Length: 205
Image 1 (cartoon, rainbow, N blue to C red):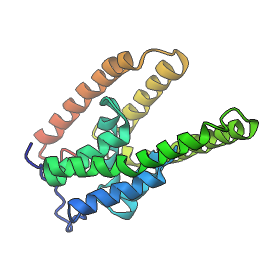
Image 2 (cartoon, one colour):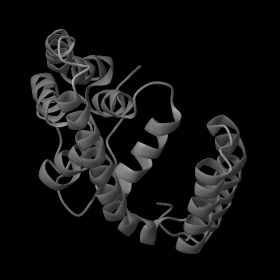
Image 3 (cartoon, rainbow, N blue to C red):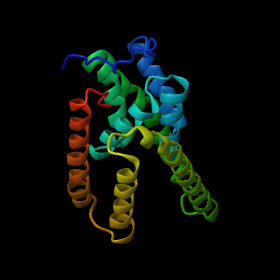
């Protein structure tokens, strides 16, 4: 697959990974910080520090990464690597995401096996779970600002978010049916709104 051009931005030279090695080490450092709450780390590193993505681009890419099979952040690393350096970039980003965490996870699993049933270990796991949930919630709140520029309109975005919460969180419907129904409606609405924007000669983003 040939490398696709990064999103255009005429206002300034966009920040981007400088090389394949930069991609590998950047995603390695990102992965090593992402124990349990990787969404918060990904957003901070890629949007706020490295500025490879705007907040709106991150929300769009993350949405795609979420509906693809596999871990979200791994899908996102493949997308960003491919965007700047094609297949080589995708593989470098993927290697960065997996190499060091895999070694650490195997070592920790070997060490944890001996104490997994102790009350202290169980309590520590529950505490880390709570921290991870808080990190993901805080990042979700930070991403709300991106809805202001969404072509679907803020009220529609909130309505879809509420429908999704009710369907999955309360009614416990299978994710695949929620994606096909609510996601399908959202896609059609976004396509319609983008078409109207293009017809008026505006920015389709």
